Length: 282
Ligand code: PXL
Picture 1 (cartoon, rainbow, N blue to C red):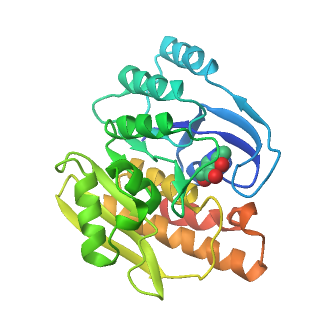
Picture 2 (cartoon, protein in one colour):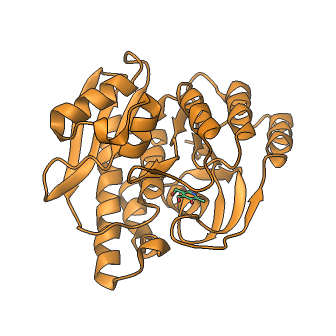
């Protein structure tokens, strides 16, 4: 079997472990070729650092896409995340039109905010555009803040608990047309994980693990990268979500023991081998 290939459309943040610095090693460890298409280059991510640099890569995107098209590249998955400008929404939509094949899995992580707050560089127009882009996806991976933005509801209006989360993923599925993996779905004080709606089966499943009572930056990116890797390797949506939930848990466990600052992300590099051992080879 040829190595599956993913086009990863995210920012590159030099320090702080998120987006491409997470997606590239995770997908590689899972036996998947990651082709990065950077949306912006930052010195650090925007959560918890001040004075970060921000180089907008909007103008590069169509040039890279045109070159890739001239090479007739094909991707088993197109996986987008943090975008650098409102124009990039249309550019990613074009990219999907140009590169989506019959079996391409389009994963849109609708990165916009967390804990009820929108990220510093996101404008209201970008949030509206992100909802439009997410409508093109096969799978979306919002956290609760992003789910509220996509549903046009106040963050505080989302109901927690199994029934509440089921309702959120079903509403986000656009009448069952796309799969949804809601992250940060806490079903009891000792547990956390995801609630999935699988468009292939029409079923909702809660995937839970023990909760590490600390927050770290970039866990959404770690989660969506493992999920994407597992999906292109042929896992079902609930199995891919279970793999992602477990990997984030072991990363959070290790990082909590080391007591690293939240903004440095999770110390996942020493744990990449666990992904290789269980999912790298078909
Ligand atoms: O983890 C999401 C993310 C990705 N990229 C950048 C960010 C954030 C969240 O703050 O700032 C640059």
